[in-house]
Image 1 (cartoon, helix red, strand yellow):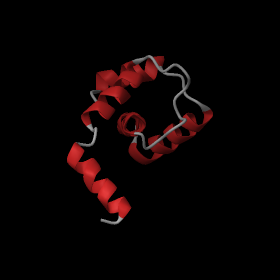
Image 2 (cartoon, rainbow, N blue to C red; image 1 turned 90 degrees about the horizontal axis):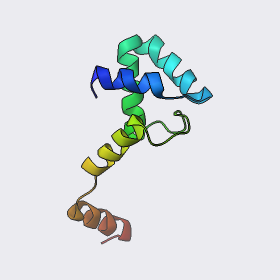
Image 3 (cartoon, helix red, strand yellow; image 1 turned 90 degrees about the vertical axis):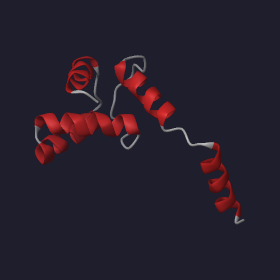
Image 4 (cartoon, rainbow, N blue to C red; image 1 turned 180 degrees about the horizontal axis):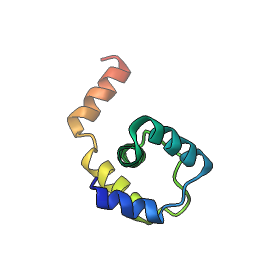
Length: 88
C-alpha cells in the first residue's frame, strides 16, 4: 500500500478504542510512518479485526476486497485442504 493511500485512509477512517491502542503500541515499536503501514496492512490482510470503525464503504473496505480477491485459494489448494481435513 502506498504512503499516499495510507494517508488518505488515516484521514477518513474512524478508529475504535482497540484500534487506537494497537496503533499507539505500533507507533512505539516501529515509528510513526512504518506503524501506519504495518497497522493498515494488518487490517487489510485480516490479522487485526475490530480496530477499524463502522463504515465499510471507504478505501479500507476496497483494499480488503482487493486483497481477498487476489489471495483467493485456487481449486487445487481447496482440494488439498479438503483431503487433509478428511484424512485422505
